[in-house]
Image (cartoon, rainbow over the protein chains, first blue to last red):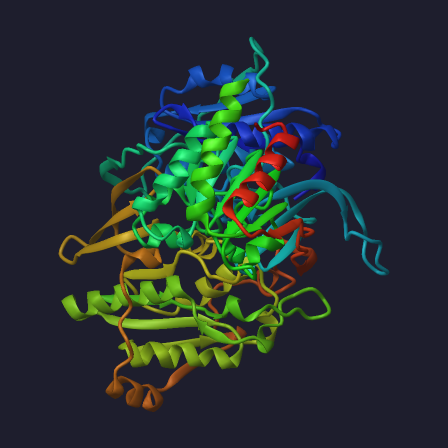
Length: 348
Length: 263
Protein backbone atom coordinates (compact mmCIF):
# COMPACT_ATOMS: atom_id res chain seq x y z
CA UNK A 1 0.00 0.00 0.00
CA UNK A 2 1.15 3.53 -0.63
CA UNK A 3 0.85 5.20 2.74
CA UNK A 4 0.69 8.71 1.26
CA UNK A 5 -2.64 7.95 -0.38
CA UNK A 6 -4.24 7.73 3.04
CA UNK A 7 -5.41 11.11 4.30
CA UNK A 8 -7.59 12.63 6.98
CA UNK A 9 -8.98 11.67 10.36
CA UNK A 10 -12.13 9.54 10.31
CA UNK A 11 -14.33 8.44 13.16
CA UNK A 12 -16.98 5.73 13.29
CA UNK A 13 -20.14 7.58 14.33
CA UNK A 14 -21.86 4.89 16.36
CA UNK A 15 -25.64 5.14 16.51
CA UNK A 16 -28.11 2.83 18.18
CA UNK A 17 -31.84 3.06 17.42
CA UNK A 18 -31.05 6.06 15.19
CA UNK A 19 -29.59 7.98 18.10
CA UNK A 20 -25.93 8.96 18.14
CA UNK A 21 -23.95 7.41 20.98
CA UNK A 22 -21.99 9.84 23.16
CA UNK A 23 -18.75 8.20 22.09
CA UNK A 24 -19.30 9.46 18.51
CA UNK A 25 -19.24 13.04 19.76
CA UNK A 26 -16.23 12.39 22.00
CA UNK A 27 -14.31 10.92 19.07
CA UNK A 28 -15.10 13.99 16.97
CA UNK A 29 -13.62 16.21 19.67
CA UNK A 30 -10.39 14.19 19.69
CA UNK A 31 -10.32 13.89 15.89
CA UNK A 32 -10.39 17.69 15.59
CA UNK A 33 -7.32 17.93 17.85
CA UNK A 34 -5.45 15.31 15.88
CA UNK A 35 -6.35 16.84 12.52
CA UNK A 36 -4.83 20.17 13.58
CA UNK A 37 -1.45 18.42 13.83
CA UNK A 38 -1.72 16.83 10.39
CA UNK A 39 -1.59 18.21 6.84
CA UNK A 40 -5.14 17.19 6.09
CA UNK A 41 -7.28 19.10 8.59
CA UNK A 42 -10.67 17.72 7.63
CA UNK A 43 -12.56 15.49 10.07
CA UNK A 44 -14.85 12.86 8.57
CA UNK A 45 -17.58 10.96 10.39
CA UNK A 46 -18.64 7.60 8.97
CA UNK A 47 -22.31 7.09 9.67
CA UNK A 48 -23.78 3.62 9.13
CA UNK A 49 -27.42 2.72 9.63
CA UNK A 50 -30.88 2.66 8.16
CA UNK A 51 -32.72 5.98 7.87
CA UNK A 52 -30.01 7.88 9.75
CA UNK A 53 -29.30 10.77 7.39
CA UNK A 54 -30.89 13.18 9.85
CA UNK A 55 -28.00 12.64 12.27
CA UNK A 56 -25.50 14.37 9.98
CA UNK A 57 -26.30 17.85 11.33
CA UNK A 58 -25.56 16.86 14.88
CA UNK A 59 -22.24 15.38 13.78
CA UNK A 60 -21.47 18.69 12.06
CA UNK A 61 -22.27 20.64 15.22
CA UNK A 62 -19.78 18.50 17.13
CA UNK A 63 -16.96 18.96 14.63
CA UNK A 64 -17.47 16.82 11.52
CA UNK A 65 -16.54 18.60 8.28
CA UNK A 66 -17.77 15.72 6.19
CA UNK A 67 -20.16 12.82 6.81
CA UNK A 68 -19.89 9.65 4.77
CA UNK A 69 -23.28 8.02 4.95
CA UNK A 70 -23.97 4.37 4.26
CA UNK A 71 -27.70 4.01 4.59
CA UNK A 72 -29.14 0.57 3.98
CA UNK A 73 -31.81 -1.66 5.55
CA UNK A 74 -29.07 -4.27 6.13
CA UNK A 75 -27.61 -1.86 8.72
CA UNK A 76 -30.75 -1.33 10.78
CA UNK A 77 -29.50 -3.04 13.94
CA UNK A 78 -25.87 -3.81 14.60
CA UNK A 79 -24.68 -7.03 13.03
CA UNK A 80 -20.98 -7.75 12.59
CA UNK A 81 -20.89 -8.72 8.94
CA UNK A 82 -22.84 -5.96 7.17
CA UNK A 83 -21.27 -3.29 9.40
CA UNK A 84 -17.79 -4.71 8.69
CA UNK A 85 -18.51 -4.74 4.98
CA UNK A 86 -19.73 -1.14 5.09
CA UNK A 87 -16.83 0.25 7.10
CA UNK A 88 -14.15 -1.75 5.25
CA UNK A 89 -15.64 -0.55 1.94
CA UNK A 90 -15.51 3.05 3.14
CA UNK A 91 -11.83 2.56 4.02
CA UNK A 92 -11.07 1.11 0.58
CA UNK A 93 -12.86 3.95 -1.16
CA UNK A 94 -11.91 7.00 0.94
CA UNK A 95 -8.56 5.90 2.41
CA UNK A 96 -8.37 7.49 5.85
CA UNK A 97 -5.01 8.05 7.51
CA UNK A 98 -6.57 7.54 10.95
CA UNK A 99 -9.79 5.79 11.95
CA UNK A 100 -11.13 6.00 15.49
CA UNK A 101 -13.82 3.66 16.80
CA UNK A 102 -15.43 3.67 20.24
CA UNK A 103 -14.34 0.86 22.57
CA UNK A 104 -17.98 -0.10 23.09
CA UNK A 105 -19.67 -3.49 22.86
CA UNK A 106 -20.18 -2.65 19.16
CA UNK A 107 -16.79 -1.07 18.45
CA UNK A 108 -14.79 -3.82 20.12
CA UNK A 109 -16.45 -6.32 17.75
CA UNK A 110 -16.44 -4.18 14.62
CA UNK A 111 -12.92 -2.74 15.02
CA UNK A 112 -11.01 -6.04 15.04
CA UNK A 113 -13.08 -7.50 12.25
CA UNK A 114 -12.52 -4.44 10.03
CA UNK A 115 -8.81 -4.19 10.80
CA UNK A 116 -8.37 -7.83 9.82
CA UNK A 117 -10.28 -7.35 6.60
CA UNK A 118 -8.26 -4.34 5.45
CA UNK A 119 -5.02 -5.68 6.98
CA UNK A 120 -3.94 -2.97 9.34
CA UNK A 121 -3.10 -2.66 13.01
CA UNK A 122 -5.65 -1.89 15.71
CA UNK A 123 -4.87 -0.66 19.20
CA UNK A 124 -7.53 -1.46 21.76
CA UNK A 125 -9.16 0.68 24.37
CA UNK A 126 -6.96 3.75 24.10
CA UNK A 127 -7.07 6.45 26.75
CA UNK A 128 -4.78 8.96 25.06
CA UNK A 129 -3.97 9.76 21.42
CA UNK A 130 -1.27 12.06 20.07
CA UNK A 131 0.55 12.84 16.86
CA UNK A 132 4.33 12.35 17.09
CA UNK A 133 7.45 10.56 15.93
CA UNK A 134 7.99 6.82 15.76
CA UNK A 135 10.34 5.67 17.15
CA UNK A 136 10.01 8.33 19.81
CA UNK A 137 13.75 8.99 19.58
CA UNK A 138 15.93 8.54 16.47
CA UNK A 139 17.48 5.07 16.41
CA UNK A 140 20.42 4.00 14.25
CA UNK A 141 19.41 1.85 11.30
CA UNK A 142 15.71 2.65 11.66
CA UNK A 143 13.85 5.37 9.81
CA UNK A 144 12.09 7.76 12.19
CA UNK A 145 8.64 8.50 10.84
CA UNK A 146 6.94 11.77 11.66
CA UNK A 147 3.29 12.64 12.25
CA UNK A 148 2.35 9.16 13.36
CA UNK A 149 -0.61 8.34 15.57
CA UNK A 150 0.71 7.43 19.01
CA UNK A 151 -1.89 5.41 20.85
CA UNK A 152 -1.63 5.02 24.61
CA UNK A 153 -3.49 2.37 26.53
CA UNK A 154 -3.44 0.69 29.90
CA UNK A 155 -2.80 -3.07 29.99
CA UNK A 156 -2.41 -5.73 32.63
CA UNK A 157 -5.48 -4.54 34.49
CA UNK A 158 -4.12 -1.02 34.70
CA UNK A 159 -0.67 -2.01 35.99
CA UNK A 160 1.12 -0.82 32.88
CA UNK A 161 0.80 1.78 30.18
CA UNK A 162 1.90 1.20 26.61
CA UNK A 163 2.21 3.62 23.71
CA UNK A 164 1.73 1.95 20.37
CA UNK A 165 2.20 3.04 16.75
CA UNK A 166 1.24 1.57 13.41
CA UNK A 167 3.96 3.01 11.16
CA UNK A 168 3.72 0.81 8.05
CA UNK A 169 0.00 0.22 7.58
CA UNK A 170 -3.02 2.44 7.03
CA UNK A 171 -5.41 3.43 8.36
CA UNK A 172 -3.95 3.72 11.83
CA UNK A 173 -6.84 2.32 13.83
CA UNK A 174 -7.70 2.66 17.50
CA UNK A 175 -10.66 1.87 19.65
CA UNK A 176 -11.09 4.58 22.28
CA UNK A 177 -12.48 4.15 25.74
CA UNK A 178 -15.78 5.99 26.29
CA UNK A 179 -15.78 8.86 28.76
CA UNK A 180 -12.14 9.82 28.23
CA UNK A 181 -12.07 12.21 25.27
CA UNK A 182 -13.75 15.63 25.43
CA UNK A 183 -16.54 16.71 23.12
CA UNK A 184 -16.40 20.26 21.80
CA UNK A 185 -19.10 22.79 22.61
CA UNK A 186 -21.57 22.32 19.76
CA UNK A 187 -21.44 24.90 16.98
CA UNK A 188 -25.11 25.69 16.37
CA UNK A 189 -26.13 25.53 12.75
CA UNK A 190 -22.87 24.04 11.50
CA UNK A 191 -23.25 21.96 8.35
CA UNK A 192 -21.15 19.12 7.01
CA UNK A 193 -20.68 17.91 3.47
CA UNK A 194 -22.72 14.69 3.24
CA UNK A 195 -21.38 12.02 0.90
CA UNK A 196 -23.71 9.09 0.30
CA UNK A 197 -22.01 5.81 -0.46
CA UNK A 198 -23.43 2.32 -0.73
CA UNK A 199 -21.13 -0.64 -1.40
CA UNK A 200 -24.12 -3.01 -1.86
CA UNK A 201 -25.01 -5.78 0.58
CA UNK A 202 -25.21 -9.44 -0.41
CA UNK A 203 -25.97 -12.04 2.26
CA UNK A 204 -23.27 -14.64 2.82
CA UNK A 205 -22.50 -17.33 5.43
CA UNK A 206 -21.28 -14.68 7.86
CA UNK A 207 -24.64 -12.92 8.09
CA UNK A 208 -26.41 -13.54 11.37
CA UNK A 209 -30.08 -13.21 12.19
CA UNK A 210 -31.28 -11.15 15.14
CA UNK A 211 -34.02 -13.26 16.67
CA UNK A 212 -34.86 -10.87 19.47
CA UNK A 213 -33.73 -7.58 20.97
CA UNK A 214 -34.30 -7.08 24.67
CA UNK A 215 -33.63 -3.62 26.04
CA UNK A 216 -32.66 -3.59 29.66
CA UNK A 217 -34.23 -0.30 30.55
CA UNK A 218 -31.74 1.62 32.56
CA UNK A 219 -33.39 3.61 35.30
CA UNK A 220 -30.08 4.82 36.64
CA UNK A 221 -28.19 8.03 36.02
CA UNK A 222 -25.38 8.34 33.50
CA UNK A 223 -22.32 8.47 35.75
CA UNK A 224 -20.08 9.53 32.88
CA UNK A 225 -22.03 12.75 32.50
CA UNK A 226 -22.01 13.68 36.20
CA UNK A 227 -19.96 16.64 37.43
CA UNK A 228 -19.93 15.34 40.99
CA UNK A 229 -19.83 11.65 41.86
CA UNK A 230 -20.33 10.22 45.31
CA UNK A 231 -18.90 6.75 44.99
CA UNK A 232 -19.18 3.98 47.56
CA UNK A 233 -17.30 0.74 48.09
CA UNK A 234 -17.49 -2.36 50.21
CA UNK A 235 -16.82 -0.22 53.28
CA UNK A 236 -20.31 1.28 53.02
CA UNK A 237 -21.45 -2.04 54.47
CA UNK A 238 -24.90 -2.61 52.99
CA UNK A 239 -27.32 -1.56 50.29
CA UNK A 240 -29.39 0.28 52.92
CA UNK A 241 -26.39 2.25 54.12
CA UNK A 242 -25.98 3.80 50.66
CA UNK A 243 -28.72 6.15 51.88
CA UNK A 244 -25.89 8.19 53.47
CA UNK A 245 -24.30 8.56 50.03
CA UNK A 246 -27.62 9.28 48.33
CA UNK A 247 -28.18 12.14 50.77
CA UNK A 248 -24.72 13.61 50.19
CA UNK A 249 -25.13 13.32 46.43
CA UNK A 250 -28.52 15.02 46.62
CA UNK A 251 -27.12 17.90 48.69
CA UNK A 252 -24.37 18.49 46.10
CA UNK A 253 -26.60 17.85 43.10
CA UNK A 254 -24.33 14.93 42.28
CA UNK A 255 -24.77 11.28 41.36
CA UNK A 256 -24.02 8.07 43.24
CA UNK A 257 -21.62 5.55 41.73
CA UNK A 258 -19.79 2.55 43.16
CA UNK A 259 -16.94 0.06 43.00
CA UNK A 260 -17.03 -3.47 41.65
CA UNK A 261 -17.37 -5.00 45.12
CA UNK A 262 -20.68 -3.19 45.51
CA UNK A 263 -22.02 -4.56 42.22
CA UNK A 264 -20.79 -8.05 43.07
CA UNK A 265 -22.64 -7.82 46.41
CA UNK A 266 -25.81 -6.84 44.56
CA UNK A 267 -26.11 -3.49 46.33
CA UNK A 268 -26.07 -1.39 43.14
CA UNK A 269 -26.56 -2.11 39.42
CA UNK A 270 -23.60 -2.60 37.09
CA UNK A 271 -24.40 0.67 35.27
CA UNK A 272 -23.09 2.59 38.28
CA UNK A 273 -19.75 0.79 38.46
CA UNK A 274 -16.55 2.80 38.05
CA UNK A 275 -13.33 1.08 37.02
CA UNK A 276 -11.55 -1.19 34.59
CA UNK A 277 -14.55 -3.47 34.12
CA UNK A 278 -17.04 -0.66 34.69
CA UNK A 279 -17.02 2.90 33.38
CA UNK A 280 -14.30 5.49 33.16
CA UNK A 281 -15.30 8.80 34.72
CA UNK A 282 -13.65 12.20 35.06
CA UNK A 283 -15.94 14.41 37.13
CA UNK A 284 -14.94 17.72 38.68
CA UNK A 285 -15.24 16.10 42.10
CA UNK A 286 -15.05 12.42 43.02
CA UNK A 287 -15.82 11.19 46.52
CA UNK A 288 -14.36 7.72 47.18
CA UNK A 289 -16.17 6.53 50.29
CA UNK A 290 -15.31 3.18 51.81
CA UNK A 291 -13.41 2.30 48.63
CA UNK A 292 -10.05 0.67 49.21
CA UNK A 293 -8.74 1.77 45.82
CA UNK A 294 -7.76 -1.38 43.94
CA UNK A 295 -5.80 -0.52 40.79
CA UNK A 296 -8.77 -1.60 38.64
CA UNK A 297 -10.95 0.97 40.35
CA UNK A 298 -8.37 3.73 40.25
CA UNK A 299 -7.94 3.17 36.50
CA UNK A 300 -11.53 4.34 36.04
CA UNK A 301 -11.46 7.52 38.15
CA UNK A 302 -7.93 8.88 38.54
CA UNK A 303 -8.52 11.57 35.92
CA UNK A 304 -11.11 13.25 38.13
CA UNK A 305 -10.21 16.88 38.88
CA UNK A 306 -10.49 16.55 42.65
CA UNK A 307 -10.57 13.27 44.56
CA UNK A 308 -11.71 13.13 48.17
CA UNK A 309 -11.34 9.82 50.00
CA UNK A 310 -12.94 8.77 53.25
CA UNK A 311 -11.81 5.43 54.63
CA UNK A 312 -11.27 3.97 58.04
CA UNK A 313 -8.17 2.04 56.92
CA UNK A 314 -5.30 4.52 56.90
CA UNK A 315 -3.30 2.20 54.62
CA UNK A 316 -5.97 1.99 51.93
CA UNK A 317 -4.34 2.58 48.51
CA UNK A 318 -7.09 5.06 47.63
CA UNK A 319 -5.18 7.62 49.71
CA UNK A 320 -2.32 7.40 47.19
CA UNK A 321 -4.47 9.02 44.52
CA UNK A 322 -6.71 11.21 46.67
CA UNK A 323 -6.11 14.95 46.77
CA UNK A 324 -7.74 15.07 50.19
CA UNK A 325 -7.96 11.99 52.35
CA UNK A 326 -9.74 11.60 55.64
CA UNK A 327 -9.10 8.57 57.82
CA UNK A 328 -12.34 8.06 59.68
CA UNK A 329 -15.75 6.45 60.01
CA UNK A 330 -18.01 7.28 57.10
CA UNK A 331 -21.08 6.55 59.22
CA UNK A 332 -20.19 9.39 61.54
CA UNK A 333 -18.76 11.82 59.01
CA UNK A 334 -21.32 11.67 56.20
CA UNK A 335 -24.46 12.75 58.07
CA UNK A 336 -22.68 15.79 59.52
CA UNK A 337 -21.03 16.66 56.22
CA UNK A 338 -24.33 16.46 54.33
CA UNK A 339 -26.03 18.65 56.91
CA UNK A 340 -23.33 21.32 56.78
CA UNK A 341 -23.25 21.35 52.97
CA UNK A 342 -27.03 21.84 52.91
CA UNK A 343 -26.78 24.71 55.39
CA UNK A 344 -23.93 26.34 53.47
CA UNK A 345 -25.81 26.13 50.17
CA UNK A 346 -29.03 27.40 51.77
CA UNK A 347 -27.25 30.52 53.00
CA UNK A 348 -26.27 31.51 49.47
CA UNK B 1 -20.05 -32.04 16.97
CA UNK B 2 -16.47 -30.78 17.12
CA UNK B 3 -15.52 -27.78 19.19
CA UNK B 4 -12.19 -25.95 19.27
CA UNK B 5 -11.57 -23.79 22.32
CA UNK B 6 -8.75 -21.25 22.21
CA UNK B 7 -7.17 -20.70 25.59
CA UNK B 8 -4.30 -18.55 26.73
CA UNK B 9 -1.87 -18.82 29.57
CA UNK B 10 -1.69 -15.37 31.13
CA UNK B 11 0.37 -13.84 33.86
CA UNK B 12 -1.64 -13.32 36.98
CA UNK B 13 -1.88 -9.53 36.94
CA UNK B 14 -2.08 -9.40 40.71
CA UNK B 15 1.52 -10.61 40.93
CA UNK B 16 3.20 -7.56 39.34
CA UNK B 17 4.43 -7.10 35.79
CA UNK B 18 7.91 -7.44 34.27
CA UNK B 19 9.38 -6.22 30.98
CA UNK B 20 12.32 -7.20 28.79
CA UNK B 21 14.77 -4.48 27.77
CA UNK B 22 13.06 -4.15 24.34
CA UNK B 23 9.78 -3.12 25.97
CA UNK B 24 7.94 -6.39 25.36
CA UNK B 25 6.51 -8.36 28.27
CA UNK B 26 8.71 -10.81 30.08
CA UNK B 27 6.06 -13.51 30.44
CA UNK B 28 8.65 -16.04 31.61
CA UNK B 29 9.18 -14.08 34.81
CA UNK B 30 5.53 -13.98 35.93
CA UNK B 31 3.09 -16.42 37.60
CA UNK B 32 0.83 -18.09 35.04
CA UNK B 33 -2.88 -19.06 35.04
CA UNK B 34 -5.57 -19.96 32.49
CA UNK B 35 -7.23 -16.75 31.31
CA UNK B 36 -10.63 -16.45 33.09
CA UNK B 37 -12.78 -15.66 30.01
CA UNK B 38 -11.14 -18.61 28.19
CA UNK B 39 -11.97 -20.88 31.10
CA UNK B 40 -15.63 -19.83 30.77
CA UNK B 41 -15.38 -20.64 27.04
CA UNK B 42 -13.96 -24.07 27.87
CA UNK B 43 -16.71 -24.69 30.41
CA UNK B 44 -19.34 -23.77 27.80
CA UNK B 45 -17.76 -26.28 25.40
CA UNK B 46 -17.68 -28.98 28.08
CA UNK B 47 -21.36 -28.41 28.82
CA UNK B 48 -22.13 -28.89 25.13
CA UNK B 49 -20.04 -32.06 25.32
CA UNK B 50 -22.11 -33.28 28.31
CA UNK B 51 -25.28 -32.53 26.37
CA UNK B 52 -24.44 -33.70 22.85
CA UNK B 53 -21.23 -35.72 23.17
CA UNK B 54 -19.07 -33.17 21.42
CA UNK B 55 -15.34 -33.56 20.99
CA UNK B 56 -13.47 -30.68 22.62
CA UNK B 57 -10.02 -29.67 21.40
CA UNK B 58 -8.15 -26.98 23.29
CA UNK B 59 -5.56 -24.94 21.46
CA UNK B 60 -3.05 -22.51 22.85
CA UNK B 61 -0.23 -20.43 21.45
CA UNK B 62 2.68 -19.49 23.66
CA UNK B 63 5.91 -20.54 25.26
CA UNK B 64 6.49 -24.30 25.81
CA UNK B 65 5.41 -23.87 29.43
CA UNK B 66 1.90 -22.97 28.18
CA UNK B 67 1.41 -26.75 28.02
CA UNK B 68 0.31 -26.39 31.65
CA UNK B 69 -3.03 -24.79 30.67
CA UNK B 70 -3.69 -27.63 28.22
CA UNK B 71 -3.12 -30.14 31.05
CA UNK B 72 -5.51 -28.15 33.22
CA UNK B 73 -8.07 -28.26 30.39
CA UNK B 74 -7.60 -32.06 30.11
CA UNK B 75 -8.26 -32.34 33.83
CA UNK B 76 -11.51 -30.43 33.35
CA UNK B 77 -12.56 -32.77 30.54
CA UNK B 78 -11.06 -31.60 27.23
CA UNK B 79 -10.30 -34.40 24.77
CA UNK B 80 -7.37 -33.12 22.75
CA UNK B 81 -4.76 -30.42 23.24
CA UNK B 82 -2.59 -28.52 20.77
CA UNK B 83 0.30 -26.26 21.69
CA UNK B 84 1.45 -23.87 18.99
CA UNK B 85 4.94 -22.74 19.86
CA UNK B 86 7.87 -21.46 17.84
CA UNK B 87 10.47 -18.77 18.28
CA UNK B 88 9.42 -17.05 15.05
CA UNK B 89 5.91 -16.54 16.45
CA UNK B 90 7.09 -14.43 19.42
CA UNK B 91 6.32 -10.75 19.87
CA UNK B 92 3.09 -11.02 17.88
CA UNK B 93 0.39 -8.35 18.12
CA UNK B 94 -3.28 -9.27 17.75
CA UNK B 95 -3.08 -9.37 13.93
CA UNK B 96 -0.12 -11.79 13.93
CA UNK B 97 -1.55 -13.82 16.82
CA UNK B 98 -4.89 -14.28 15.08
CA UNK B 99 -3.12 -15.15 11.79
CA UNK B 100 -1.13 -17.84 13.64
CA UNK B 101 -4.13 -19.34 15.41
CA UNK B 102 -6.19 -19.29 12.21
CA UNK B 103 -3.30 -21.10 10.48
CA UNK B 104 -3.41 -23.80 13.15
CA UNK B 105 -7.20 -24.15 13.12
CA UNK B 106 -7.19 -24.66 9.34
CA UNK B 107 -5.75 -28.13 10.06
CA UNK B 108 -8.74 -29.08 12.19
CA UNK B 109 -12.35 -30.04 11.66
CA UNK B 110 -14.79 -27.96 13.68
CA UNK B 111 -18.39 -26.85 13.99
CA UNK B 112 -17.76 -24.28 16.66
CA UNK B 113 -14.78 -22.23 17.81
CA UNK B 114 -14.97 -20.65 21.25
CA UNK B 115 -12.54 -18.05 22.56
CA UNK B 116 -12.66 -15.92 25.67
CA UNK B 117 -13.77 -12.34 25.11
CA UNK B 118 -10.43 -10.96 26.24
CA UNK B 119 -7.28 -11.90 28.12
CA UNK B 120 -6.44 -10.20 31.37
CA UNK B 121 -2.92 -9.30 30.22
CA UNK B 122 -3.69 -7.46 27.00
CA UNK B 123 -7.40 -6.69 27.59
CA UNK B 124 -7.84 -6.15 23.84
CA UNK B 125 -10.78 -8.47 22.98
CA UNK B 126 -9.45 -8.44 19.41
CA UNK B 127 -8.04 -11.90 18.76
CA UNK B 128 -11.40 -13.76 18.69
CA UNK B 129 -13.08 -11.55 16.06
CA UNK B 130 -9.82 -11.40 14.09
CA UNK B 131 -9.53 -15.22 13.95
CA UNK B 132 -13.12 -15.37 12.66
CA UNK B 133 -12.29 -12.89 9.91
CA UNK B 134 -9.18 -14.82 8.83
CA UNK B 135 -11.27 -18.01 8.62
CA UNK B 136 -14.27 -16.34 6.97
CA UNK B 137 -16.64 -17.36 9.76
CA UNK B 138 -19.53 -15.54 11.43
CA UNK B 139 -18.60 -14.19 14.86
CA UNK B 140 -20.77 -13.54 17.88
CA UNK B 141 -18.91 -11.62 20.57
CA UNK B 142 -19.75 -11.17 24.25
CA UNK B 143 -21.78 -14.39 24.60
CA UNK B 144 -23.73 -14.90 27.81
CA UNK B 145 -25.69 -18.01 26.76
CA UNK B 146 -25.12 -20.53 23.99
CA UNK B 147 -27.70 -22.91 22.53
CA UNK B 148 -26.95 -25.32 19.72
CA UNK B 149 -29.38 -26.79 17.21
CA UNK B 150 -27.44 -29.79 15.92
CA UNK B 151 -29.99 -30.69 13.24
CA UNK B 152 -30.25 -27.23 11.74
CA UNK B 153 -26.52 -26.62 12.28
CA UNK B 154 -27.15 -23.29 13.94
CA UNK B 155 -26.36 -21.62 17.24
CA UNK B 156 -28.44 -19.14 19.17
CA UNK B 157 -26.45 -16.85 21.41
CA UNK B 158 -27.39 -14.20 23.94
CA UNK B 159 -25.09 -11.36 22.91
CA UNK B 160 -24.58 -8.63 25.50
CA UNK B 161 -24.47 -4.87 24.77
CA UNK B 162 -24.34 -1.98 27.24
CA UNK B 163 -28.10 -1.43 27.52
CA UNK B 164 -29.60 -4.50 25.87
CA UNK B 165 -28.99 -7.95 24.58
CA UNK B 166 -29.62 -9.55 21.22
CA UNK B 167 -30.53 -13.16 20.64
CA UNK B 168 -28.42 -13.84 17.58
CA UNK B 169 -28.69 -16.87 15.34
CA UNK B 170 -25.71 -17.92 13.23
CA UNK B 171 -24.91 -20.82 10.93
CA UNK B 172 -22.22 -23.23 12.04
CA UNK B 173 -19.31 -23.27 11.74
CA UNK B 174 -18.96 -20.03 13.63
CA UNK B 175 -16.87 -18.39 16.32
CA UNK B 176 -18.17 -17.25 19.69
CA UNK B 177 -16.34 -15.13 22.25
CA UNK B 178 -17.33 -15.93 25.83
CA UNK B 179 -17.81 -13.64 28.80
CA UNK B 180 -16.78 -14.96 32.19
CA UNK B 181 -20.42 -14.30 33.22
CA UNK B 182 -21.36 -17.22 30.94
CA UNK B 183 -20.93 -19.84 33.66
CA UNK B 184 -19.04 -21.03 36.70
CA UNK B 185 -16.17 -23.22 35.40
CA UNK B 186 -16.01 -26.72 36.89
CA UNK B 187 -13.13 -27.94 39.00
CA UNK B 188 -10.59 -30.45 37.84
CA UNK B 189 -11.53 -33.98 38.95
CA UNK B 190 -9.02 -36.37 40.59
CA UNK B 191 -9.50 -38.84 37.72
CA UNK B 192 -9.19 -35.97 35.29
CA UNK B 193 -5.93 -34.84 36.83
CA UNK B 194 -4.58 -38.36 36.53
CA UNK B 195 -5.65 -38.53 32.85
CA UNK B 196 -4.28 -35.09 32.23
CA UNK B 197 -0.74 -36.30 32.62
CA UNK B 198 -1.29 -39.45 30.59
CA UNK B 199 -2.69 -37.62 27.59
CA UNK B 200 -0.47 -36.43 24.82
CA UNK B 201 -0.21 -32.79 23.85
CA UNK B 202 0.24 -32.16 20.14
CA UNK B 203 2.96 -29.60 19.53
CA UNK B 204 2.94 -27.55 16.35
CA UNK B 205 5.51 -25.09 15.06
CA UNK B 206 5.66 -22.65 12.18
CA UNK B 207 5.80 -25.45 9.59
CA UNK B 208 2.47 -26.85 10.77
CA UNK B 209 0.51 -23.65 10.15
CA UNK B 210 -1.65 -23.79 7.04
CA UNK B 211 -1.98 -21.01 4.46
CA UNK B 212 -0.15 -18.31 6.37
CA UNK B 213 2.59 -16.14 4.96
CA UNK B 214 5.73 -15.46 7.02
CA UNK B 215 5.01 -11.76 6.66
CA UNK B 216 1.94 -12.20 8.89
CA UNK B 217 3.70 -13.89 11.79
CA UNK B 218 5.56 -12.85 14.90
CA UNK B 219 7.02 -9.45 15.68
CA UNK B 220 7.81 -8.83 11.98
CA UNK B 221 4.24 -9.57 10.94
CA UNK B 222 2.71 -7.23 13.51
CA UNK B 223 1.33 -3.96 12.12
CA UNK B 224 1.36 -2.38 15.57
CA UNK B 225 4.66 -1.68 17.30
CA UNK B 226 5.39 -0.66 20.84
CA UNK B 227 6.82 2.83 21.13
CA UNK B 228 7.03 2.78 24.90
CA UNK B 229 5.87 0.55 27.74
CA UNK B 230 6.21 1.23 31.39
CA UNK B 231 4.82 0.66 34.81
CA UNK B 232 2.19 3.14 35.56
CA UNK B 233 3.41 6.32 37.19
CA UNK B 234 1.31 7.00 40.22
CA UNK B 235 -0.26 10.36 40.64
CA UNK B 236 1.39 12.39 43.38
CA UNK B 237 -0.16 11.78 46.74
CA UNK B 238 -2.26 14.57 48.19
CA UNK B 239 -3.03 15.28 51.82
CA UNK B 240 -4.17 12.66 54.29
CA UNK B 241 -5.52 13.55 57.71
CA UNK B 242 -6.60 11.43 60.67
CA UNK B 243 -8.68 13.56 63.01
CA UNK B 244 -10.14 12.71 66.37
CA UNK B 245 -13.78 13.44 65.75
CA UNK B 246 -16.24 13.39 62.89
CA UNK B 247 -16.85 17.11 63.48
CA UNK B 248 -13.20 17.94 62.88
CA UNK B 249 -13.15 15.74 59.77
CA UNK B 250 -16.19 17.57 58.43
CA UNK B 251 -14.62 20.93 59.22
CA UNK B 252 -11.55 19.90 57.23
CA UNK B 253 -13.65 18.71 54.28
CA UNK B 254 -15.91 21.78 54.31
CA UNK B 255 -12.78 23.94 54.19
CA UNK B 256 -11.62 22.16 51.04
CA UNK B 257 -15.06 22.30 49.39
CA UNK B 258 -15.28 26.04 50.03
CA UNK B 259 -11.69 26.59 48.84
CA UNK B 260 -12.54 24.76 45.59
CA UNK B 261 -15.78 26.74 45.15
CA UNK B 262 -17.95 23.65 45.31
CA UNK B 263 -19.92 24.93 48.29
